[in-house]
Amino acid sequence: MATKNKEKETEKNQIKIKVVVSEEDFSVDSEYDFLSSKAPRTGAIVSFVGRVREFSEREDITGLHLEHYPGMTEASLNKIIELAHQRWDIQACSLHHRIGSLQVEDQIVYVGVSSAHRDEAFDACRFIMDYLKTEAPFWKKELTQDGDYWVDAREKDQQARARWQSSASDQS
Amino acid sequence: MIRVYFLAKIKDELNMDFYDLDVKLPCSVSDLRNSLLSKFKNAELFSKDYAICAVNHEISNSEKIVKESDEVAFFPPVTGG
Image (cartoon, rainbow over all chains, first blue to last red; front, side, top):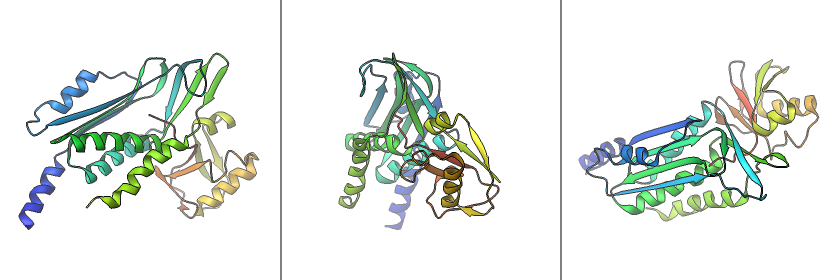
């Protein structure tokens, strides 16, 4: 039994992680290559891309400015992936979050997760996004025709994150 | 004295990236918050419900003790993703 546990631990430690915070754009194809290469035990890859919309509370958004806290942001993202890894048997994770000036239709964030089975990949991907939105130090400023406005944190993002906390006790 | 960094809306409203706050160290995050409130007279910007304090990149509660070598930042609730 002890040997089996050890094997399980070793497998779990083999997670491949890539975290990038950058003004540069990302390529979904390249991220998929990172998750799928040399991965014969991977049976599922789930990814999420967040984009700049032309509407929010306001209808006339022309772009976004994204600020972060260098050092803390990267540490926070790695911690969120580690939390997901503790919870699900995921094999690789790539997370790319852009900063600086972005225009409508630009990509903002990529989260990709691989695992042996789809449930883990779906759940871990959503968990990482829900935690990112409430924990990782990024701030959006919306640019509109009438001026620029810092976006306020939203209650529905807190509720999305709280769902994972309440379901933790359901897991054995 | 400790350098306190500001981010996002707090930085914009104060029009400064950081401020060297004249406090006796060590002190608590709560003491820092009170000093910022009395310096900038902006209760909303530095209220406990709005301004989050990070000490050495860790979100910290009011009781957290801050030392001279610590990196301290105040910022609004996060809105990335």
